Image (cartoon, rainbow over all chains, first blue to last red; front, side, top):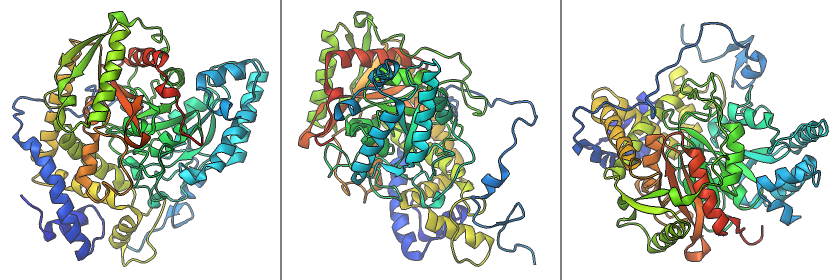
Length: 95
Length: 486
């Protein structure tokens, strides 16, 4: 299958990336080229094969739920584009 | 002084030990070279006062009687490792000026061993690319030929070591980002087993693949630094809990017991004759040194590229969702509401390749496509990994080309993403399998551009792989060549 302009706009919105119609045209062509490359895996018989999500088949390690370190709050927040009183500022979401 | 700058890490360690040079003198020497060769654009952030402070500390530690192969030796870090004292951007506009509150574990371990940081190295944005042309801060030039790409994504790391602006550089490999630039830039590039180096503080691209490693002048130098760099880290949830190892223990390896697997699929159509010839000459050298060559087969290795672009893009789309203009980095100047702010921030903050991969990843994970793409790719990934295990029943290491040709020119592949992706044909399969792999210089091709030999070993067998590389470097001098003018 081949992605249409509307598909690209939908994916871009899911990914939260603004895209113009002109960009979507170009992107549709590139994504379709990439998907054509990816399609090659569809023909492989994978019946009975367990998907591999970790190269060593490792599992998520858990640690005790305890405080181990105190982050440097001031320095961490100094990277925020907008902040006040230790809070991250964003455009109003509630009227 | 250029003779000193051309010395290996091992030699610098010995000289520091004998007080023939101080850490401050070495730091000054390399900082001067970095300044002189700024035109390569290998470095993104250099702060001499921080470097010299670390060097003075190293000299004081030696004065107090402390020793160590790395104590006082300079290193530069790829800009995907976060650092307290240097900005960290992953070569992206979206992280411009980011000041990390902590050091990555890899940076911290090497600093505790006494390594002196020279600064941060340019790379492809979020380590996505094979040419270093995707950096928001400009391309890096290849010191062997300024019209050629240095390789990517660790292009700054490879160019810096090739030009001896640093005796060693950290790097990361997700699908070939250490080995491909090592091959293109004529240096030694090594990716250990997935899970051996900590990913804590390494800006995430594809978490099931991302592996920290090194660009060095020799395999021996890599072994010395791996001793400090690799180890269990409780802060990384996929870190492998194994005891520390001495990675120099197999440097005196006897090759007469060694079986080198040669995958027939790596020498098929598409491999340029000059690379084929150089790699086969290296294999003959190994035979002369006593090793036995055996044919092995990796029938589905060519599917590595499509598998990789599903798995890596999917993981990237998830990992990069954190860049939304709220907690750190760039935020668009004008927007209507919260969602519009995020959409505009990401549209303006990410480069074209990063956006492409996030879109591909979002698509393959989206409702209705997850099974056909992501799960199917994860199954084919296991088929490829299992083929390596079958091959390693017949051999100790696998050898072959790193890339199909020498470094290409700027702009040659940047207009065609798929052509660029196919550059990683020989490096992606071992990344998917999580096995250690490296590139060592083995000759030169057209326009004097370097050629690399790839060595791959089974999980946790990097000491033997480094030994195999070291024996070759004892018998040849490709790795000791330095580009003219440096």
